[in-house]
Length: 144
Figure: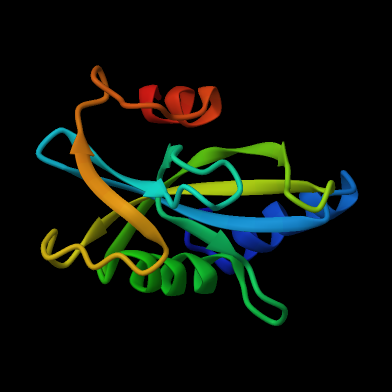
C-alpha cells in the first residue's frame, strides 16, 4: 500500500479515531535542494512566532489527502505535484483542549516560488541542520 492509496489513508483515520483523537491535521514536508519549507505562525496566533511545516485541519467530508493538497495551496500558494511518502504522525493538545493528530507527508511541488502566505507572517527554506524555533515534534520529523 502506498501513502496515496485510499486504503492506507482510511486506515490512518480509523487508527486515530480508535485512539480517541478529536482533530486531524494534514501537513506537507516540502523539500527543495536539501532544504525544507517552514512557515512562521503569526504573533497573535496560538503558538505565535513558532515555525512549522505547512499544515491545516481536515474538514468534514474531506480525506486527509484532500486536506493536504488544499491546505498546502491555501497556506503557501504552492501546488503539490506528487506525494512521495508518509513520514509519520504526532499528537498534540490543540487550542480547544482536545487532542489533534498531525499526519505528515513528503511532497514535491510544481514550482518552489513564489511562496504566497495567507496565514503566516514569514517563510524560509531551512537546512535540517539549521532549523529556527520549531517544536521538538517538527524537529524530529524533519530529521527522519
